[in-house]
Length: 408
Figure (cartoon, one colour):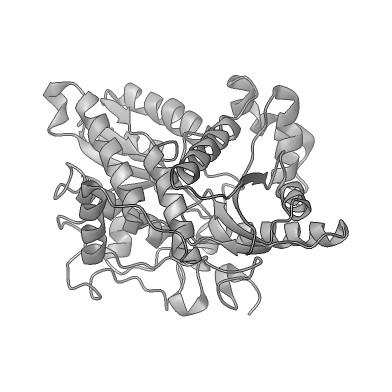
């Protein structure tokens, strides 16, 4: 019988102030960024004590996964590997090989396609296999679990968090509140190339848009599109405009399901972007979350905001700094009531989802029973979801030739 394991593969983060610049050097390797500039970039980490919350969060996910596997009576160890900081994925994979693991199911902490959300993790897997060869051990077969942006458990957990956040708003502003979704921005050129070539590009941004729509439909904001949807990036895409995408991109959003998902409909959403970096001359997905909040205020819209961090599974640095600090301050300065909903990754249902993803691949493992909320989310996804999940490959292979800008 094949000895299998589950590997959690993540981005990584510093554990103390002394780690910050070396960590950022790993993140930016090959770009020639001066150390002085990295020290400036690291100020967010230094302000928060030099420690990223992502490592402890990933350890909590692993503990939840181990508990879920134990609950089901599944004998499958869980390993932890990062791209940019200890424990490195190369070391984790070599250790799996030494432990006799023959097959590893790889769960990456990104729900999305695109280079940074998917293909870079495939490169991590390739590098880990090469590390095994250098160590003269036989690497396990590395089966990457697929994207999960439309998974019913993922959608249901986000929707529940949105409703919980809304209920924390003062009663007098709760009913008229707007739901805004935020995800990590990427260069428009990278988004243009995201996904297998046959898909046409923009896979990352369209998956984010798709997930946001499903979460909104599953929440108390159903049928209440955000006030800025018609002029924000998502509104442009819904009008079939090539927002940084190739001309052959699938920028139509309703024909395959027979439902009008365009601007001004009950299914429209308000989507903004955050955490951009690099040259200000390089186009990135817009609008920026803080710019968007300021624009709302300038137009006289002071309705409360429920901000959903749809792009992230846990409250790591981009959430704690860019949303809980900068976006919150922008709302306060504009006199707008503001609350940020929780991310889903530390919940027990998230661990159940991951093990169910393994079950989909292993076939010998029985899947868990869905909750009523998850059944409802699955029905919503069947009705409205227009964007597929990719990413399910072996040993770091790309989904297709040319995927996410790789060589065709």
